[in-house]
Image (cartoon, rainbow, N blue to C red):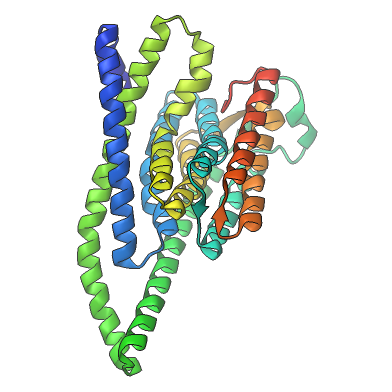
Length: 366
């Protein structure tokens, strides 16, 4: 889709491209607002915490560009790009995007749920590194010119783990919803246990019907975000080329940043409107999906698995683990609210990664 849009926009004048950029930005912001609105309504009607909604439904939608780019790259014989996109997006989401969201407004979080999802986030990243390491000769990964492999069978395993994560998230949310409904009914009516169960089941049927329409609207809003982003990035890229910005800089900034744009606008809009738990859930879920879904799906469709260049072992993997560990420490230190100071720490971690990447001659995320 993005290639077709680029072909269409390439011959257009700078004035037309500027207009496309402006309209895309407005549409992107509007659709992101709708994503936040419908996610909040879905949380309120279903009783599922916003952090869980963000970590499942919303993150599945906003991660779609990474999945599409990585699987397509693998099909076209460029599996190294697929791994770079997955790992680079995790670093960008956690360091840059969550850092910016914290600076806009401190993010309130339900600590127990964020802590549980956060451990899954860190485990997914560490598993990605573990299955990419040459454990028989681990030091060879740091030799010049070494090319490792994330095997195809590990890709299938990651897809199974993805299904298990989604199933567990649904089970946790149902358990939390039933418990909340039962407690509320007991407090209001003092009904017998059997009556409470019956009433809870009736409520669940009503909620299911109401939630279905909200889920459809939420999905359509996410599609709007993705389409707006897919129009915006080619337009900006063409304009940048016309003012002679080098291709290498474009690859390391606009192109790498483009697939994370849905997460950025969703997180920023959620933070701006006081739904910090939705923003945090979206980033945690996106990181889990980047590891399990993006890398897993790309490896599963590639006969030889995904190539892992020497630079990953020296720079990219350590940076990903560092940023994820910083986030874990932040959850423990900040408890119920991720402060602006923590946002500075996350941004600092991301800038350190960029600095090391530039010094090592590695394009960020690749």
